[in-house]
Image 1: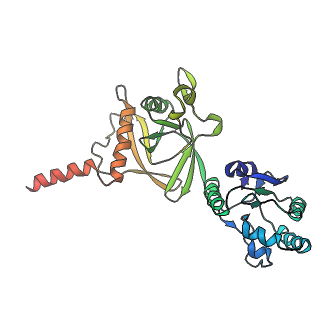
Image 2: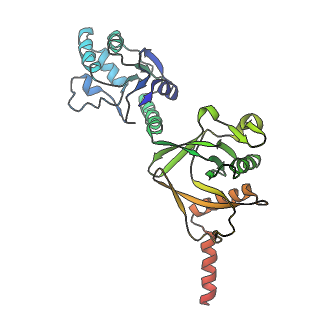
Image 3: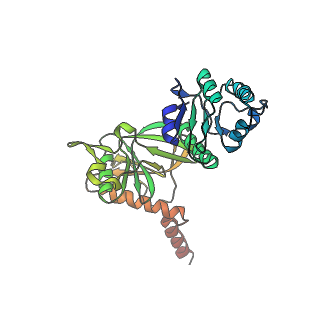
Length: 303
C-alpha cells in the first residue's frame, strides 16, 4: 500500500484526473506498460502494478476513432488497477478522463521520458514498500560509514554523536531511527520527519543540529554499515582486546558488523567510533590489523 500523496511527491507527478482515493493498492515495485491490454489481450494482465503509458501506447490510442478508443479504455479501466501514469507530458484524451472519474482511478502525469521514469519508479517503490522497523538508537555518517549507535538510555549515545558532529561528521537520526531493509544484504536508516535533525541533550533539552551547525552537519538517509553498542563498563566482563573475531548482529535478518564499547569516565567515545569506522573500511579493502599482527607473531615463532 502506498499513499497517493507520497507517490505524487516522491516522483514529482501532476494530477490529471482527481480521485477520492488516499491510498493505492500497490504491492510490488514492478510496473506494467499496457500496450497488449489496450489492443485487447488481457490473459496475463498484471493489474496490481502501476500502469505506465508512454509514446507507443499513447500513439496507438490516439490513432483510434473516438468510439474504438472508448471501447478499449472502458475495458482497461474496468480492471482493478491502482493508477495510470502518463509520461513525456502527454495529456489524457477525454475518454480516459471520463472513465477514470467513473471508476475513481487516479490518472497522473510526468514530464520525464518513459525509460527514466520507470527507473525512478522502481527505486522509489522499492524503498517505500520495503520492510520497516523502528529502533531506539543514533545513526551517524562517520567517514562515509553508517554507524548505528545503540545502548541503554543515559549511556551517552547522544553525547558521543554530538562530539562526532563537532568533529565534522553528519547526524542522520537521534533517539529514533526508522530502519528500512532495501534488499537482503542492505539496511538504510533515517529519522522520522517530526523529529528530523533534532537532538536531546540531558540537562540542556532539545537542540536543532541543522540550525546550530549548518546543513553540512546533517544527512537525510544513510546505509547501516556498523553497529556500535555502548554499555557501562563492567569490571567482571572480558572485552575484546585483539579484534580477531568478527561479531555480527541481526537486524531484520540482515547481518551487520557489531562492536561493544564499554563506557567509563575519561574515554573519548567519539575518537574510538572514528577509529572503528576507519577500521571497518580497511577490513572491507582486505586489511585487518589484528590478523596482520597475528601473522607476524606466527612467523616469528616459526623462525
